[in-house]
Image (cartoon, rainbow, N blue to C red; front, top):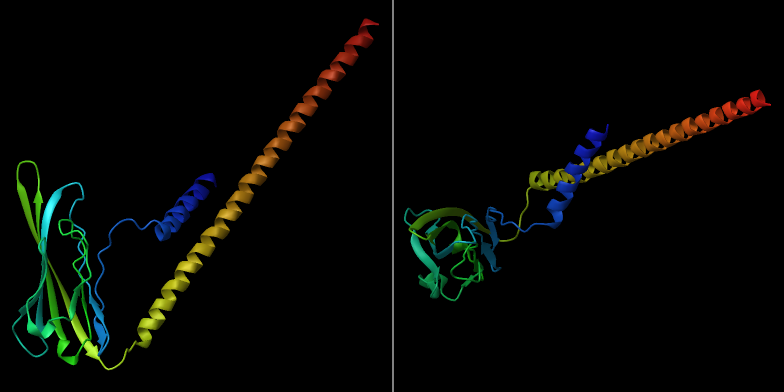
Length: 222
């Protein structure tokens, strides 16, 4: 029982800590639906660089309009700052990633005043050089975002139901773990109290037996 309770406590503590201690970088997919006239973040996160190793990085964004076969470059970000590469996106793209040019993990950009012409495929490239003591290590990471621009935001029923079920499952699991922990705690407390009572009874019987033997010895002496 004690081992099961310890296991439950470990699971509960780990899960609870996960909601409050999100220090690690997480690679997540970008959203894929934008509303015309609104802003939109094109997400591009990569967490492969070791923070203790010096490095340099360049992020490049390319765009393939819907119905076309070729990509063209629209944006570059490196140690020299941002460069907008195409007139279609001039004054409409802001850097939304890491602030330090030599420690880029988030290469996201933000589109202002999205238009229907922005529908298409976006590709970002992380080009990184890690500077080790005796050599340099080059990595190239690519991520794709298929963007659809709509007149107003839509959300499928299946997506809503899935999200609700996820939260219900998480809450249900935490409640179950909490109940199990309370049950285990009460069982352990009850077992401890029973052990104390048994020890007290044993001590009382030992004292009573010793007193009886002493009384018998006094009577024999008399």
